[in-house]
Image (cartoon, rainbow, N blue to C red; front, side, top):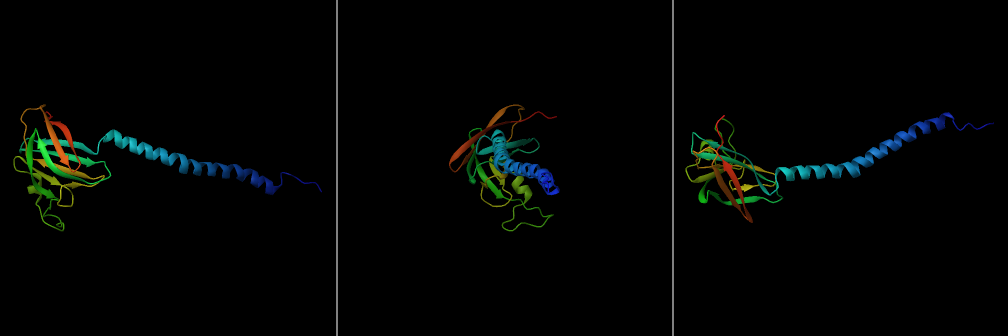
Length: 180
């Protein structure tokens, strides 16, 4: 009896072996090479977007009101609690901090702050929308909006916003943009 090396059983192994090897290589690549590469890309993109712990995401001057609003992002791993805010070297006083309650929706638990009170600060005061707690703290990976009771009437004039947090301070240049 002659042994045929290409029997039906052996042919099955010849077809399945490359498929199994390919599948194992894909799993190995995903687990050991692609995962760390993706994490490194995510970290480098975040570093490009936010090279420091506290970043200015966007800002807006409201010309109808004496107010500017700034959106901040905490890229760090620890909460940042704001202790002072300065605008062009002048200290602004802390006003309302927390999450504004809109009476048209279900109110949040805790002290109620109306949306108008928190969004429209009095002159030389700052309010903060934290989307929750009533302390001026931005959690890691969190976004908060500061409403500043300041005004500018000269389009394109730069202003310095300095935010002091526990453990450091951050300065940003903001300017009133032309309409249009």
